Image (cartoon, rainbow, N blue to C red; front, side, top):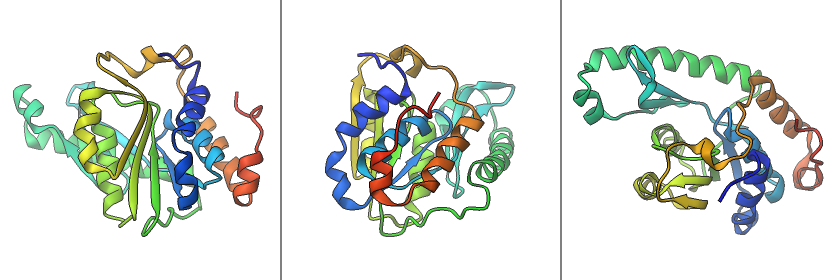
Length: 227
């Protein structure tokens, strides 16, 4: 299965989540690529949309090699087995994690601006990304959200590696995936158009949703604005 782009993926994912429309859910997208997917889910369900910021913790000197992730709310996930096998010390990795924590704070300010963080306590939260490969960033986000005492956390993604999805399933109340992939080298291979989502696009999505007053406006929003 392939998706045309993140909007197409979001619409297909939203079709599998319609039962949650009656739960007054809060949809949270992981920036940046998860936001256009999450927008389609929120629009379909008539639900509010916000961002939940997560940053990969890369290996010292090899930032593309993910050893873990840090999330808004302070949750940290580190694959210590991988860290030790590659010869990195706890101190080195924690220094990298601290730098990424500062970037998380900067992105919260950039994306949310003066608006407060969403009230999660007692809510059904649908956490959306554009796909799950290793699952490190999603795991950090889930653990951070748990500290806010939601009623339930639903992880929703268009595509994910089966092994990673299985490892995440015990940490959420429900997991919805359009296409669980047995063999995955990257999320992008399942999209025809997987161009990077910019900060400006994320800000535009969130600004538009904030202007929409209530479920009816969210359900009736048009498509043409997203380019």
